[in-house]
Length: 492
Image (cartoon, rainbow, N blue to C red; front, side, top):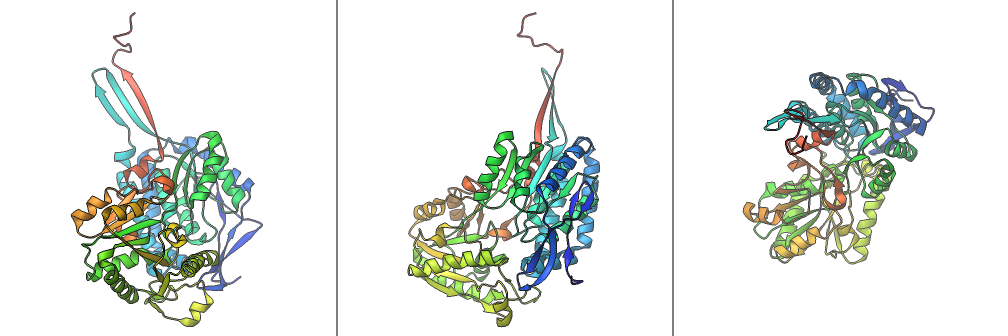
């Protein structure tokens, strides 16, 4: 084993637990290089972790909110102190450029700090005095939370669950994706060390571990980010015990470019390009299909390609000139290529974008040169399916009604964006079926952790971030105290 390789252990009841079997994680830039190893935990390990969390809940939920906040703030500082090391590990195992990894850590820390800053306002008991007595509205912890997180933004999509769950007095068992398990495990270890044993547990493994985390009767809530099809299985597994759920699922986010959009606005055009290709397009909330008013379509395409060619530079994530790294894994790259090939077979035109900075490295890794697809049909796979990779179709529309109809013609409704004169754009935005609609920006560029985030339709249930993201990890408990203990309309 190389000195540069990282070995991750499970964390159960405050102890590192080694596994007989370990899974290697390769570097997507150089797949013959093993970055590290994560354990392949068993169903029995998952049960032990759930039992530990269940045992810890009764005492943890009784701790003061001040203590919970203090512990979380200590973890925040330790993550800040190790940002450089964590970002490097994330880029090595994931493939995203270093600036992107640093940005993910920054978003995670911003959310942790927001949660700490707002925990008292949101989570402390509300007491109402009224003519018939007094009512206490308490925000109780729910119990054991199982969190299952994806590979595309492994840190932020884990922290979005960990921070509010622990602050609200819950305990947790977290299972990261095997496609990016290393950096997130380091962060979870940092946080776990600041909390009592059993409050935050970490397991890895295959589907049997996931099934236990979603069906075990001691689990009170499931927090999942991932694919819609997987979520359907989770809901079925959780049905017998009617578990609380927060599900942030797939998206096929539409970007509508109105006739009054200024195609000569280079900064706006660059924002649109970034909203399509940041993290090689592997973001749930990225703009995945662009609809452009027919009157400006041709000029828009020309200026879009110009902007893309200026910003997109494909190569090693540690090259400071690089803006886009490899796709995270071969399976995803093959899927994205199948969508492109399907569009080409039906007559669409595929245009390569940007520069490849190192041809040799490009051939060795899971790289894909970003592409724009022109002339696709509205019902082609590349338009209807979530690509989750560095390609995007651009299609024309005739008027606002047409654009809104096209945007809403999807089983998904995570985010969307409208580009054009602000008043006009807002008017259109109000009619789009999505959890979030951004104006003249999209994707991470328009994300604000102070406000709730989540989807409609098959893009999810519940909200994360914002004050709602804290409340999502509580049960509302109403305690009524009448003035004299009797109600006047009931006879003696």
